Image (tube, rainbow, N blue to C red):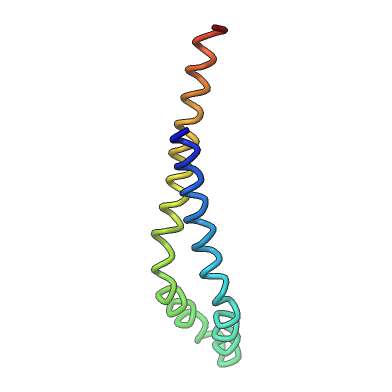
Length: 88
């Protein structure tokens, strides 16, 4: 039961982070297109500035993925325990 709640919390954290970053996708596209039109040497600084702009999203996204992974490990250990216990 706890593992399912942890999994859902991690899933919500990851999906909400992706949605919030996705809402700014048009501005990312416009910024990168403007940098491309200036020349290829302007792409790397533009990419760096976009990465710095969305650096806040790294921790909630990775935290959600790690929480989901931890919950899956707990579920797997519970299934192994149940299988080793045998029929009741």
